[in-house]
Image (cartoon, rainbow, N blue to C red; front, side, top):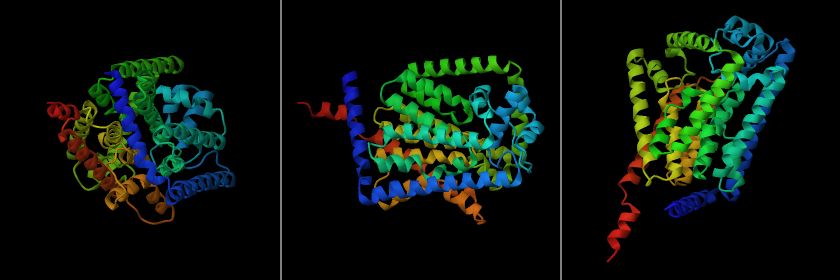
Length: 421
């Protein structure tokens, strides 16, 4: 039975790689080198602009999200870990004063991971953080690129990653961790997959449907490894920062929720179903109920897809990425980076084909909210929510339809039995 399963996985992997061969053409190489080169250029230019502005204004940091990570890590080193929950001290450390509410509200393991960056100057820390994020994606995307350089580069430097790169956010690291877990599961390395999934709890709000996929697929060794990893990282980090960190985190999370809830209707950067619905005028209580209904629907699709052996691994992976984006009420625009890996898996699964509808959806997923952010920088009005919502909903509908088709198809084994004399 194990040999048959391995043979099926090998055949499916070969078929997925064959579907990507369309990129091994002159136009494919242009697509996979020129646009990634543009993304690299824009990122380097943005960082250079930021660093020159820091020097010109005499500021310690730049007005992006990474300043909070750096300031928290530096505070933890200079004073103590609990000082990271003092918003005034965070602002004093990074030196940027604006109207945005940007506190520290992360688990202690994330703070411990950032401590080495707090020992560096902000410019060096940001460059190191960005480089590590890209390197992690380079490693994580490779197993799914089919050995094709243009595919590899196109999905390591996708325009959908621009908001995360520009803001210095963790979306790319988180995506790389999930990709590494999926590659480990596909290669029958459940313990390693569980370790990667355990590390994803550094940003727990994105992982709501991951346990559903693991339970549905019966990945018990992966589940145990993930639990052990989570307990180990939490225990070690709690030992370092102290047990008092958790009550402070809980209090800050509550305050953060109150502040975000009060402004969510006008906060176009919050692109979750909850945020989008409130932005369209739906009462907050109703929007929250609809959000949890969406979460349940997403979890149900993941459970059905990951339980069935008729659904290919690539379609399961695409479904997981898309439902992650729909399952949490707390989703910022830079998390739309997860659309790009989902597009790769849909292409590998043969769901999105090289025909106009498939090309258009794959293209929009690959672009994500990168072009929207660039338009904002050039003073054009754009609405992140109204750009993101149709893309993610269409991608979800595509996954749902594909899973239904796979489930309704006759089982190969049953067909073979019927054909026997």
